[in-house]
Amino acid sequence: MRDKTQTNSAAPGDRLIRAGAVVFFAGAVATLVTVAPLLLGTTPFPTYMFGLSMLMGVGFLVAGAGVFQSIAAGRRQARTGR
Image 1 (cartoon, rainbow, N blue to C red):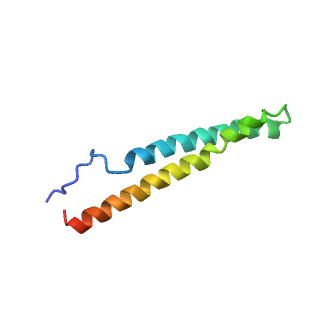
Image 2: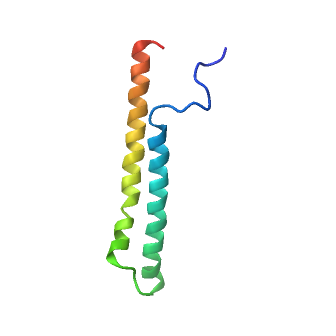
Image 3: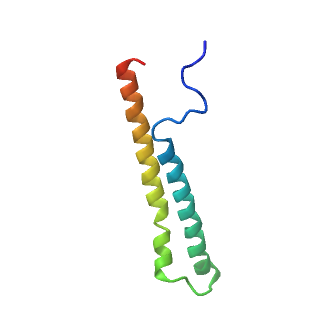
């Protein structure tokens, strides 16, 4: 018996999760780039570069919002019985 959900169909919240992952990894790269001069003993980057490191938290929150949106859609679907 086949499931009604297609494997390639996008569920609610999937785009937010993907976007959050991209923003998170961009923040992770920014963090590595920002911290590297401190560990290597070279001239540190300007202060605004440390702000880019905050993208990790923003990406985490965006992905979390996508997860909660997916949970809400699953609950709505369970209530309607489809």
